[in-house]
Length: 333
Image 1 (cartoon, rainbow, N blue to C red):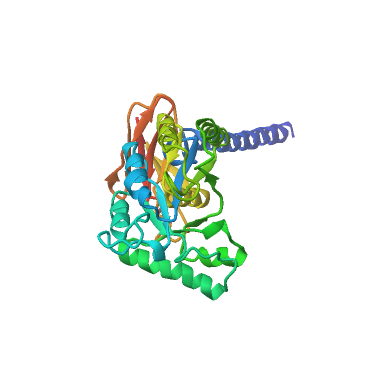
Image 2 (cartoon, rainbow, N blue to C red):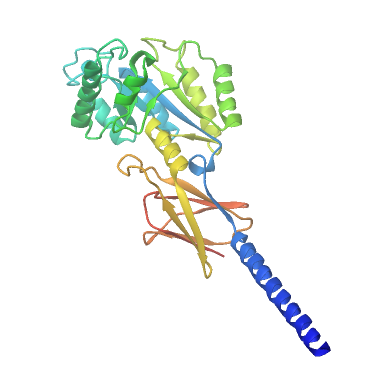
């Protein structure tokens, strides 16, 4: 009897020990899964704190002669919204010397600026029929594609006028449309522009500048140097502020908000599989991946058999990747 009781106690002990071992093994496995760096997609390109897109309405000649060169001096690119009806067909035979030509716009596009749709004839889209809205938008899309050889993937509402029906039509086959803006022009001062940038940094927000005239035209500056000095200020904050075209930033934000990362570890290699269920023809902006780990000595990253450039900082490493590409292989040493 005592022998049976002893055996039963022994058996209970063994069962308890096995149970503890299983729980402990599961705990260790959970800990191992949590080991290693934090891997995430940056809120903005380069893991910056905010973003700014400078947009210019109506296709003014000064956008080509002044704005684009000034932006390029600082490594910036802008978005220029045009109305096809007012663009000069030939530079040597201009119908309006205050407006750009298609040759000007094509050159700007080739230098990295975004040329996009502001409606064919700048009509208030809330005061015409929906069929006329479609004509205004699609006719301008067609001529931009014909003249610039690049499709228009964004849209700017003339007079900023829109309603739900207009937005639905404008968003067709489009990354985004301009539904918010900050006026930069006649009432701008260095102090106001600095406050705007500071608020974007504090709130980690995306600011969309809206400019029309420079020296002449609607809402022109009291002095264009206000804008150029502002560019210098933003350039000095390049580690905090990402300046991208409207399409670039809009696409980045949509991709960032929708992407899923399947992360696992095999041997010493971290494997990250990006899953993005958006139309790749519209949403193909590279995203920035951040590896949060201190004192990384060396890191090698590959995607689709290509080695990706990596920037190493004291507390992290980061690189740009294709959100529609294959599995990312990360080797940290």
